[in-house]
Image (cartoon, rainbow, N blue to C red; front, side, top):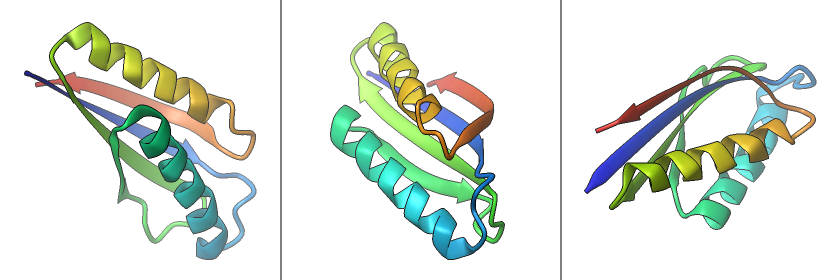
Length: 93
């Protein structure tokens, strides 16, 4: 069993309030959960309007599958025009 963890620091330039930020993040988290069957949570920056840190977790039989899922998930995030990826970190346990 392989457990993968990916943390992604995001910058939301167009966010003018916590409500704006929550709308964008909720849509993104729902899309990632539905498409890739992974766990997603905001783990840092909850009080900031334009910064968010998301953690994604995936459990599988092979490391290559976990890496593939995270790469595809990051591509979905990169295609969102209102979100910019600042930093990513991968861990395999």
